[in-house]
Image 1 (cartoon, rainbow, N blue to C red):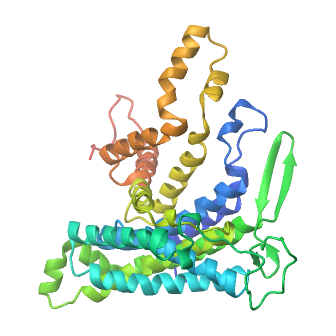
Image 2: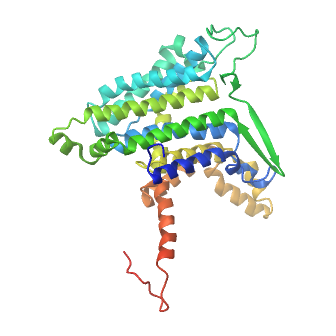
Image 3: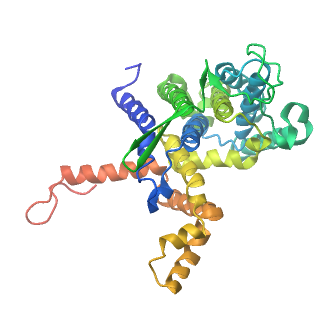
Length: 400
């Protein structure tokens, strides 16, 4: 189906189902219950899950296939965002031109950065990409303020000269749309104590993510993907055979940058405001964590990693002392205060500590990320089913 093997088509189908039923999957607890704190089925979070999934998918094409670790991918995210917001200010609030231009501009910028950075490999390549990202951030924050808005950022205004849109009444805020469909348009479904929100912007972003995921599968299975794996395996030996690896690594870098630009354009489509903070080095580090946590070099791993981190960022970070006291209110005061004191450093503003500990555990015990964890669990159940114990307590086949 669509040029995919049965296994890859099944994986694409699973991701499509997860995207389609995300409002139900992310809202497992009834409204008003103590556990409703962990519901994540609201539009802003769901949009970020799929958008940063695109960002991580693109980064995985570079890092997962070639082994080149970029510490500056947030620069392409930011460049794509700025390109999109200027299209909305000058041309139209329709998100299609904004997204197309964000991909194009990010691709051209990544071509320049990659052409220079790929002259080196290893840690030197990583430092070069980090330097480009920080220079881009500095330019956006303090030098190119007429274009980027500096520290205040940019957002559409009713006075902007949009060529294809009609004039807006004074004071009315422009809203991103898809041929008239408001990106913030939502409808709610109430089933008993559960409330599910279906947002137009989320489903548009999810559809684009599915296309991006499909393209990544085709890249992984293509001759280009095979050449990129050869680069990761032993680039020096590949060069000795007479094959020039530079065009392949540059192609991977540009494709990865275009994915980042697509994510940046979608961020603007969902929230029409852009700031230089999207280009800061922490944003580049975040996509590295997403990819490694989910499983670098795997297809679905970056999506899982992006979803996990964004869920923690938006849910665990909101658990404050008042919520903790509510959880342990049934305990005696002394024990309640003790439990709150113990858990307090790991939630709220300290959610990064929890993420760091989980990341350490994954790297130590699951080098293949969350995907490897799922595979181990699946293999455990398959082994139990395939190797039932004999009456004397021994297995019918020797252990591997």
